[in-house]
Length: 308
Image (cartoon, rainbow, N blue to C red; front, side, top):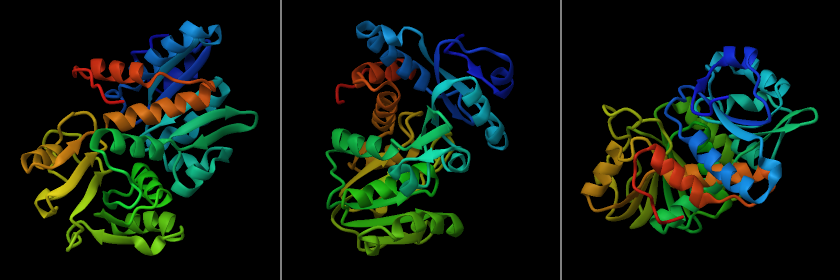
């Protein structure tokens, strides 16, 4: 089967995916560089261990209303693992057999592993985020002031990771008050929950600390015409900006931050490191994150990045 093709629910019903199959599942998904990234790492695994000879990673566009049909089909077709992306990370929690402690706390799963009775869910987004912040921006979540935008699965993972790592203050903003309350439920009961403050995007927090990091976990920026999700002019000069979006490489938020002299980075490193952690869970082997980053940059027509 062609690992560069974007498959659908109908393909899942009709086609045979031989060997050890893995896949990323989302909607839309044609833009994803995960297949290129994971298959590059699989080549490296294959060079040192023959058990990876028949491994391959695919891409599936599955609409939200079809996810409940698709998950059992992936399981029936013996897909060893799935990566879930927008908009499936939260919805999948009701469709799987077991959930890891991290995924349970985050209320979202981005990594599924085939088990005897069904798929087990994990979440590697938090690991990917904290690794990327450290490498790209020199930001350690421990003791940091964080301003987080969004309420989806990635935002939940980020919020929980901030709390687990001991951030000093966490502000969470979203347009929908109802969805914002759902994120608050995920972190409000955690140790240090009093450090979490929700806010509507129309009324951002004032008197921010002199240093901190703004994290965009919304989808604003995926399209060229999208406005920036936050006015960076309201950030003190010591702040950094991290946009989870990696394609386009320079979103409106990143451009605005850079124009004001703020340190800024996109979500490519997060993608690489959450992906590497997923592949480690599936393979029980050390994964070459360098090869994943090179493949991702090549797929995006970007120069190779040295930080990893």
